[in-house]
Amino acid sequence: MKTILKKYRKFVYMAIALLIIFSIGGYFIYTNFNQTKVTKAQSNYQPTKSDNQPIEAREDINLTKKESDRVEIKEKFENFKTKELENLQIFEEQLQHYKQNQSSLLLDKIYTTSNWFELLTNDIKLFLNFLNTFLGTESIISSSRKPEDELSLKLKIDSFLSIIEPELDLYLTLSREINDKYLFSEFSFLVNEIDSIKTLILNFRNIDDKTSSLQNSESEISVFTRVLEKLINVKELLIQINRNYIKFIKYKGALTHKINDFIKYGNLLINENFDSLNETYIQELDSKINLINSINVEIDNLKQLEAQLQEQKIPFWKALSVKNFLENDLKVEYILEKSNFTEEDTEKITLLINEVIAEKAFESQLNSSSFNFLEDKISKKIIKLEKLIKNI
Image (cartoon, rainbow, N blue to C red):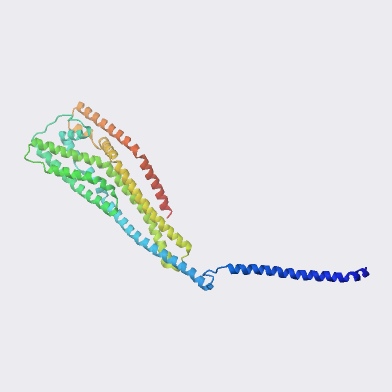
């Protein structure tokens, strides 16, 4: 065995030497290949501006960007706050304005404290003429008054008109003020009707005393009944518009409380912790400002839809007004009894009134179906608006 090892020892040494040589050669080839790849990649790389800057300079850029964002949100918040504080002041004025004038905007003094029922009760001819306005018939019962009653009637009508005229003037002033100052145009729907009542009153005062007593009497009665007719026609519309106004104030009030809280929160962040404002707070302030602005737009859109609906529903409200007046407000039985109508006349008048009530009820129901689409659209707007306000 030793003899064999000695014989081939030379070959073993040669194999080991070759293995070492190949290993070293392979290593140099591998490292040279990798170095070539790195060199090529470096030669193709285009350095950016920030790569050429020291680390301190890059940090300064990041700080400058954050500072710019803070300044930008501060400016946006301050502009928002200035505008909304003005709006809040207007809202407070609006709220006080409505509280002080709610009765006048409903013409309460005319509907509840005037003496028109007394006039109707004490004068048969006046009452019948008034009924004919709604019944659309000729005088149901002929009636005459003594000549000495003519002056008395005129004085009573004039007294009644003197009560309602300043209330109408006040309503016109208030409704125009609301429209001009608070941009709530629904009240303007009634301006023409109220103006027409004012014209009737002027006509009454211009009745020529030189004409015959009978002609004067007919003119006075005609003016009086037309005034009452117009007042009755607008009653339900007055009520509805006031309800819409209250609804509008309700939404603005809910929004006002949210805005006040948000402004306090924003002041705390911006004025007391400005240097600590991070991206999260900046995004929060920005999103809340945008949300409130969008809610204001939604409220304006809702006002426009409500105004559009009320304008379309004027015939509906008129029919409902007449129905409710004849059914609930006009004390027919009391007037007929006090005026000594016969049982036959009482039945005839009562039957005619019930027919008009049924007709107006049908008319109002017929009209109501045509507003379903717009009313549904308004309902969805209200639901959306309430959700948006809760999210502030």
